[in-house]
Amino acid sequence: MDTPILDNHLHLDPVNGRGAEAAKEFADAGGTHLLVLNKPSWYLVESVDSVDAFRETFELTCEVTEKATEQLDGRAWPVLGVHPALISQLVDSGYTPEEARDFMQEGLDIAAEFVSDGPALAIKSGRPHYEVSNAVWETSNEVMRHAFELGAETGCAVQLHTEGGDDFETVAEWAESRGLPQEQVVKHYSDGPIAGPIASIISHKDSLTAAAESGEPFLMETDFLDDPDRPGAVLGSKTVPKRVRWLLENGHEQAVETAHVETPARVYGIDTEQTLDS
Ligand SMILES: [Zn+2]
Image (cartoon, rainbow, N blue to C red; front, side, top):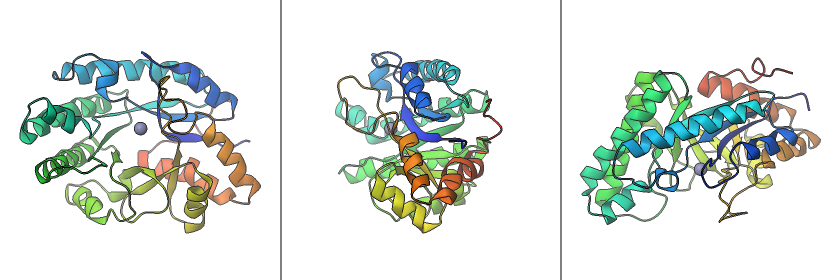
């Protein structure tokens, strides 16, 4: 295949998992570019109640992303942020929702520093995908809106982890009203076209077919976890290249161009063709 192939959301765990080895597997299958998300801070470092945990997690992720780049014809970029489920852990350990919000917003401030200082491409935020109290829901929305402010100030995209569904227009409006264009908001783990942000489609065939037929911009991802304790919990690291081949065999050349060249340029300002070195 002579097209760039980008997995828009995968994790590489340099502490417990295979790290850059998983990137090599992706490359061997034909993949060229990766956006590497930090694992939730509580997986990589022991203490989650100091903002240093975020800095340490982000540094580990930047290091493994550099090693991943060495395995690729294209390159990898880190996407750094704070997992929305952290709020529940903090509240369970005695934080008020407001204290948890402030702490998570500080984590996002640090993520944004990694973007403005160079190594990271985008930030990640969102809100819990499971039932929470009103107070936790409200403060989670405040955390997410803070991420939009940071994205607007820093000039970077924001990836979101949220509940399922296909209508995120209100969320996109929150971004727009803070100066972040809605096409720089990406909803990770989408299972088809959505209203509002750009959909990052989890690479199941039916979800990809719906996205390809919509004619809308979209991205492809696996949410590979690189977690030896949960093999097969999500898609494997070779899935995006395999599904690209399958899309091409089924006449979806334009969708492949959309997901691997046009949408990455539009959302993140990256050129996946120029950054291919072979
Ligand atoms: Zn993920």
